[in-house]
Amino acid sequence: MVAVQRSLGSYTTVLFGADQGKYPDGNSVLVRGTNGSVLIDPSLTVRAAAVPIEVDRVLLTHAHEDHLAGLSAVRADEIGVHERDLAALHSIDGLMALYGIPAARVPAMTQLVTERFHYVGWPDAVGFADDAVWDLGGVSVRAVPAPGHTGGHCLFSIEPDDGSHRVVVLGDIDLSGFGPYYGDAQSSLDEFDATLQMLPSLVADHYVTFHHKGVVDGHAAFVDAATTFASMIATREHALLGLVGEPRTLAELCDIGIVYRPGTRPPLFGDGVEQHSIERHLDRLLAAGRVVSDGTRYRLV
Image 1: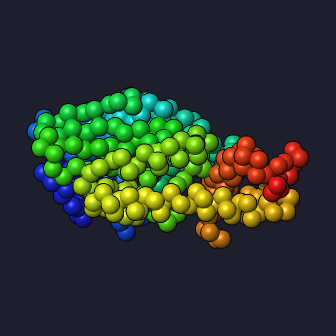
Image 2: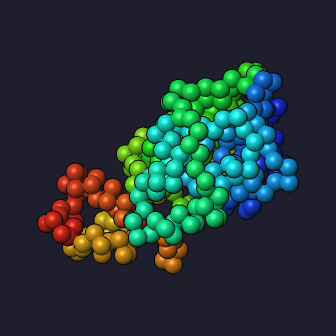
Image 3: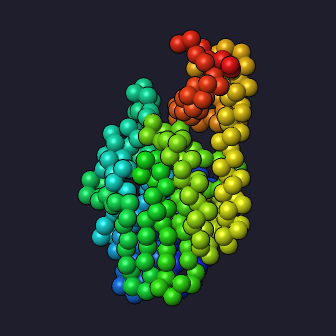
């Protein structure tokens, strides 16, 4: 079993990754009821456990490489992800399509996810719908659709029958200073906004992020952290508006960027993240009449 753990009541255990789940690792969640068990987002740390974890079902918040890195080391009868992300779990082609990796970088990205994150493709994995609930005996796990990061990104609400120690597993709503990530081909800024507006309605005792924070205790602390996390969208928009104070092409905007700090852009996929993110902000600004384009360059109105 994983060395660093925290029990959240009688049914739920957080299995912490290295450095509070700092990428490429993450924080996994194990739920054991009287009639069933679930492991959520098996990490690299789960993969390295001396004794393999055995559960009835593995559930993924979404189909990204770090959230499934321990999957092939877990003994489970079923693997599930939201149906919108299922193709990315079934095959490497589906995963690359979800990312939107340029063809020239697909071989290198494929090597990364297979060697570092142990991706093999799981064609027998099943997709679940928005209203999915798993009754484990004494505790239920309920899917909470939270798209934007990916189309199928979901949270999981862990709900003991006695109402104690309610837990929400947040996936990549990681409440970090980096802010929301909507840089894949199948991400959506509009859906992410709707997800962020929904978050305060999730009343629980504990909130678990896959990266960085680990466990946030109490609804008030969660809402405060979620508000700060969401504010990065406006920060990026403000930065972009500053860049189009003079006419610039999309390529010029991407070279400067609004997502990564200087010197931190990942070499394989960082350019794509910047482009997808900037395009989504530009679409909003064009629709709002705050920015205009001559077909080549963008500038502030």
